[in-house]
Length: 517
Image 1: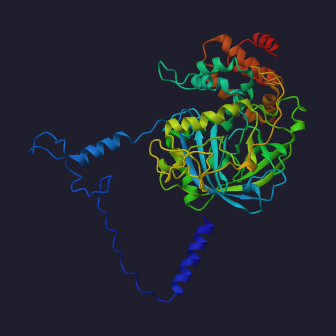
Image 2: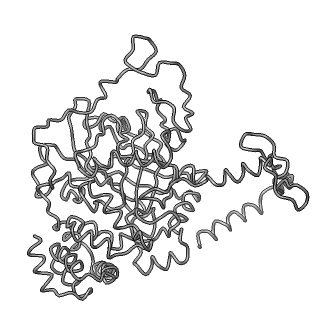
Image 3: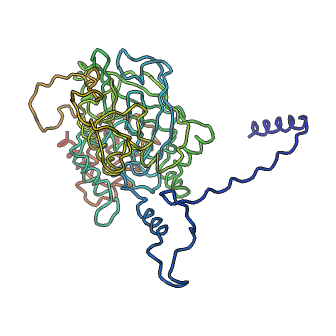
């Protein structure tokens, strides 16, 4: 405040010694543009419907009224099945160096190389229009408009996930979404599900900590969650994890603070993000990278391709910085129509064998085709900066500017298209039986216990209170005991405190824990 007063005083002093200036000529207001139909025809009267006489019925030939109502009836598109409540902003990514030793992706090919981006934050389960402070993981999806096409790094603000196999994803979402009978989200339903999913213990510990209620989108980290592959020009593969580190620090709400903030302004996180960007306070994140050689994948007591695990002890190097610098001109056209898919990768970046990621490769693009249409990549927010040249055609709202009759390949004719063989995926050896089974190294509880031990006492108390707040709504004692047994296996103090908070027998919890090991 003193600095602002001092600055204002200096400006005022300078103004008092400045030469007298003529008052600026008054500017005339911008005249309104003529109103038109969607087809460009001028609208004569946008205030009254055409009727048969002063009190007569409305005439069917009132084309402007019909078009206006019909257009209004079609303003909504299907809501995203997850990540519905979201907000996005434009930005820029700058590479810190040349990483071509590990990847041929041009976005990482030179120091200070700049790539335009779009970042969308979101809650995962709650619907569009819900308070953005509710307890939930936050989506952290970044679209890089690279010279080789779009790369979507579709992650969350927490480094792990609830499940490790996409087979269970629809079931998990069903349990977390409202009850189809009464349309209410019920802890009894999702704890029933998670009581059978011990690998969820790690993620639940994150979500029910204060990290599940961030106080600012600018002050939280982001993670790619899964392992990916970096591939260089020689075809050498390095497994990597991407971690976004906030340069604004970190700030979370307690449960009570989140409820109070939501009651005051249910779009508080959105407002905070946009107001800071508009004021020139551009938020930034550094991209950290953890690397692992393929031959090292089996050297750990966990599976590094398991998305319920972090990579402890693996050095993280900073490879670039993302800065958000522009609020979109239209919320719907950008934040709502932005479409992300982890299958959108560029040469030098590939998906790993992570079973959850493999399912997302199909599902994410498929849901956008349903939600927006087959030509969703033609929309401005999704359109690549790189030239698009393929034989896809037609479909609703196709305006890709294609011409000519050569819409197939191969062909003896000139002017067609060819494969870019040097951009093929890396080669991988597969020599095993086809199976349907869990991974061998589950280690479901250790990292959850390590996370619990990393918390300060106040954070532990908040975690127990937050879990108990929902678990005490569960009437089935077997479900409660099994859930507490999972947390007990993560850490005895963790489980003991939670057992007391939800009024279940610690003796029964220990017995279940022994069976669950």
